[in-house]
Length: 473
Image (cartoon, rainbow, N blue to C red; front, top):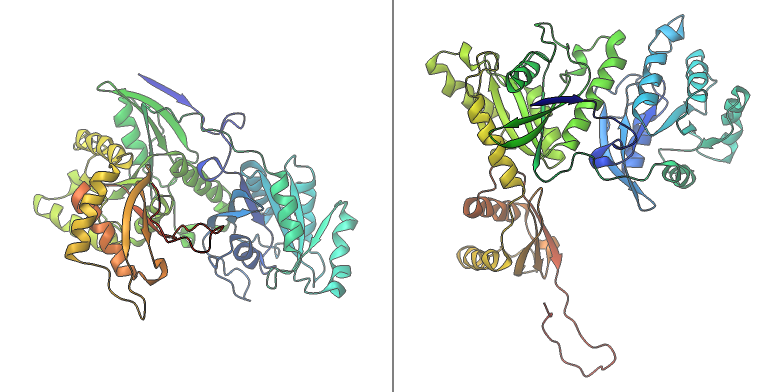
């Protein structure tokens, strides 16, 4: 049984990470988009340099302002040097932002005159139905605000003079931005009896071929040329009495492989792939076993790990390998993907169907591990054994003590550990705890998170003579 549907129905499926609204930053090179991105994301993520065009890859970050969460997207600058700015990618960049984003921040340079590229972009954005925040960056003081007013000549109703470097004017921009964002809604496909699986990877890794194999019919366009799939498409599948939603996505290429004329379409493809990960429970990363796992495969797997999804590495085209090459392919994959040793490797051939049944079993197991819950009693019996065998080392003058642990959430498994000194726990011991949790309880395929919180003694402040007592459960 198969059924295809488009995943981005705005009436039921809000954009962004986990249903969060999506905000895109657009503008020409060297106006400070990456600096603004870092400021809004509240951490240094994007490359910043005075040389135009330094942003090589698009960056995505979940961030928050005034109690509202949203996903921020930093895009490469469109080229203003072409004689016809509309042919220089401006229209494509802006239309991509209008199509995908819930709100758009358009950035200009307050210290320079508007270019033809800026004017063309403003005209397109003014005709859109999306909230647009016209921002004049590098307005480091009130004396620069006057220079930022050129945008008013183009019919813009409000301008935000800001200094992304120093933080000037950011409060007003963020306040108005989050006020314009739609309220997140529950995901339409979040049924507990349906496993949502995103298939991601580089172009030509065999993603669409795998979809065809799973569907049992050629419903996806398959081509030997990279980049055939441009959008994320969902397919509902029933197999052995179990229900799945498979999401095929466009291949994610390195920026160096993307031609200038393709950059806008590529940005849309990457956005769809990111959203597919965010809507899924299990992510299957397709790698070409014949070519070997490469750095770009590691980056793609990192996207799934950053979003705390269960992961499976599918080494496709294994039918092209000799028998003695399988072990070498696995060794190469593990060397490149050392940050996710818990992600299982499955050899498949989407073309012949070899290994697909094993992949389906791995998907079922990954989802079960992703939603696994361990009782508090079982956890603490295990924890006592760990502390007895290897207590946390002393850090400086502090001797960390761990009191008890409990599982707070599933999907992914998330634990809270109470301690007297969270900051004194060395990262190596934190890693040791996670490794021991995996050793005892499994959690194959899924990230595991452990948060350490301060255990505070409760005292009766109304009675100074009151004695210290244990926390009540």
